[in-house]
Length: 483
Ligand SMILES: [Zn+2]
Image 1 (cartoon, rainbow, N blue to C red):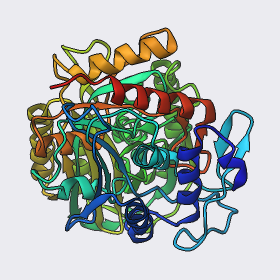
Image 2 (cartoon, helix red, strand yellow):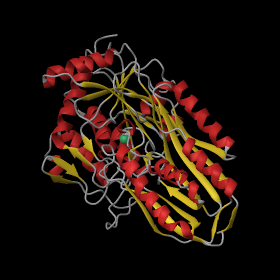
Image 3 (cartoon, rainbow, N blue to C red):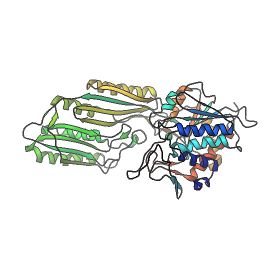
Image 4 (cartoon, protein in one colour):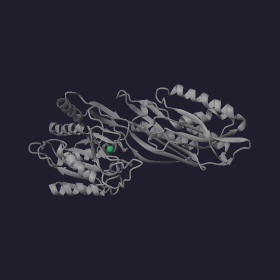
């Protein structure tokens, strides 16, 4: 661990090293919160824990800074637990083992938890440092951000005293975030009737693969192929061959663009050659459309087996539903150039074993626009006869025209690094949307060091960017003018 403590700024890295030692996957934040409690008690700092499990630690203004607005430095306590396939790691017991690889810090076969351990460590370092200049500071650490923003959902208004929120959970040095999309997970479920494969039919699997996929929000503007939609299109194009569908599966999670989809199908044996030729020809059609966005696209007809297929009316209904599903970018922002305002991703479709599951995630910078897509999806699923359920809805953070904290931080950035930061809006969820809905008076901003491949065992944080991130936070705290 001493290797980490030799890095600069040492206070921040000392806390990050300690955080790595304490298991803290989502939903298991007790131990890491206790670390914060012990720290606050040792330093004689006031702290409170709310009913949801969020903790706030307060530090008074440094001498002469009492008239400054209060700042809430915010991060989340939990990390995403992901290990490489060949690595045995018990995220409830085993420590994360960080290692320095050139300019980067990474873990050993697991996620590192730099998301959001570095943000948390920065907050603790501000609380501990005695050489900073700042107004009243509150460090707010929320529980379970990664699996539903549970802490932010449960946060009560009126609990925090600050006027400015500095979220420390974005992942690119040189970028300041001033807005984010809201979103919701929607699921439709239904059952369907089957019948025996008609006599004289053979069975095959149609497989659509090789797509790039990506994050359903952050990558939606790249217009990559959606495997469920492209497979559905292919199946629709085969209807003239008396195609019968037994099952269709695509995507694994609602918030990723599906890369792979397969369908087990049946058709008259006499049509085999014609179907093979059609698949080849349809592959050319799709590759022509996706030659740039998804040059790895593959469409194959493989062996497949089934005794039953969907009843014909059910097949029509579900293929039409998937085909009609809204998907992709729906509108670009009018106020922030080049940023997606509203989108939706058809993330999961499972039509098999007599049951249908469809999952999707609408997102928007504007809550009413997200609500409109939500109703569209409800309407379509209702028409198809599905039961609709929802979870994890969170509001967006609409960029405000005036933001004193943005201007202060931009000024400090320019002074420290000789250039302006990019002012950005992210088409994915940040806790700021929810937090801001509880504290509408807050002036909010989000920043962080450079973290690559978060939520995967390849997660790594750029070491030098952490020290510049620290300088930016420290410089901003000192530069905030009196109220
Ligand atoms: Zn995070």
